[in-house]
Length: 235
Image (cartoon, rainbow, N blue to C red; front, side, top):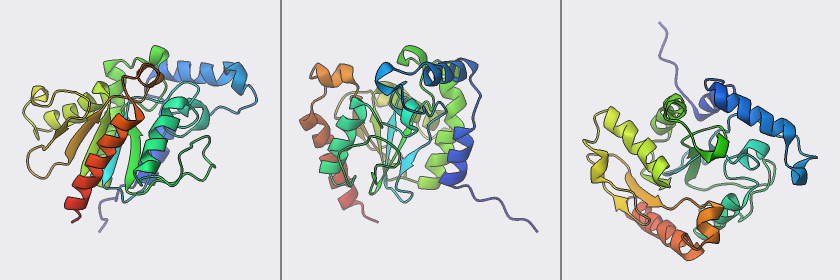
């Protein structure tokens, strides 16, 4: 008798890295890795889909948009090697979810505690704009990660990440409508049944952080709310 194969984050990540489902994204990510940016001309770019990263027993799942062309697409780790990552990991470290504030490359010693980070799209998209079909192709990985992690809280960084998560729940019949949970910075929603509590923040893109749309204090406040929720719901 053969039992059902147990999924794991390692297996999911291996499949993500090998994925070639989206011709447009494959062409773009590989072209960027070949052409490089002058500042990183000595780098051996990753140039593949970027897997999830963090604590395999995390209660907090953080969902971003997509790897940056010269960030995650270069380093092979989400939010690593760009200013968005510096902003995010700085806040995570100050909130106790990370052991250091910097993220420069995969061997830099960064570790997450009680947090795991994924992106709605695993490849860097042209102009940072994914197509609906590309997001749909990535969804099965996200669904499997949710099943393995079973988080108590989900933090969506930006409206696309929030829609990716809520859209999955709606298609599975677990929520009735996305309109009940509109995106706004600092929002948090208790979903039906035993679903994780959802928190929302502006994405820590340079466009948002340089203009002051998202400040360090604003993001730190979101993480404080998440920490309070997790402390109250320890079991």
